[in-house]
Amino acid sequence: MSNKKRILVVDDEQINLEFFDVMLSKLGFAVHKAENGQEALEAVRRLRPDLIILDNIMPKLSGWEVTKIIKSSPEYAEFSEIPIIMFSALDDVKDKVEGLELGADDYITKPFNFAEVLARIRAILRSYELVKQIENREQSIIVGERAVAEMQKAIASTKRSLEQIGSASDLVTAKELAAKTRAALVELDSRFGSFSSEYAELRNKASDIKTLRGKPHRAES
Image (cartoon, rainbow, N blue to C red; front, side, top):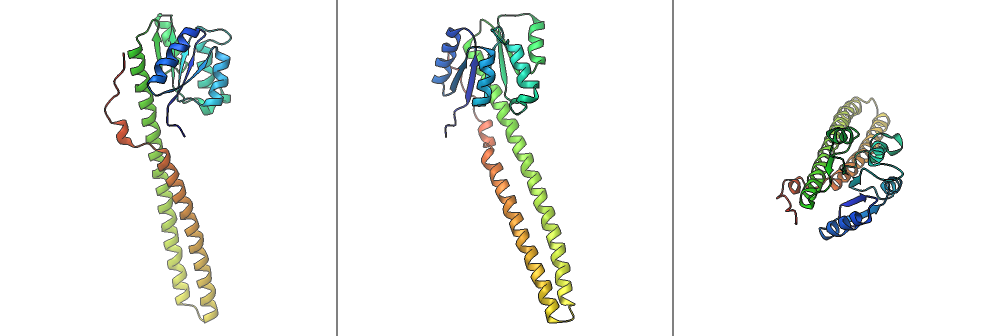
């Protein structure tokens, strides 16, 4: 499976699509293209990109409308955390504020400097990777706390069972109590197997935090 970051570029101008395709592909990104807002929404569902580069002025659906749908619509709730960089020839402060308030993570005015755009892309991707890392660690803590709670309950239950076995009036009763204790321990072992699998899955999802603190990439001019 490829580890390339998937970037969806949305623009109704073919020259811009080709430019980003060539430049970002050379830098190791997996680039996907859409020519209007409707295609963008379909691509989001199909590809689940790691980042969207979105032109604002487009036919069918504007960049503002696409951003609002992705960030606010219940239909796209599972995609709402995908970061969006919005491009626009509109340099008015009001337009920038509106784009950011709709949920865009960055707003870049055309014409742009590619080195700056690349730096912003990488900064946003690093930020989102760090957020995912933190979320995975929080989930790992929750799993650990649940496992400790189950262990404490199991220890208390086993102690009670052993006391009952020790005070049993006959061998048959003692054997029955021992069988119940063994069944409880088997169930506990199964639960811990589930905790182990859940924890292992979280570790596999989490990227190494050290890579997020590594040397910053140099933007190619």
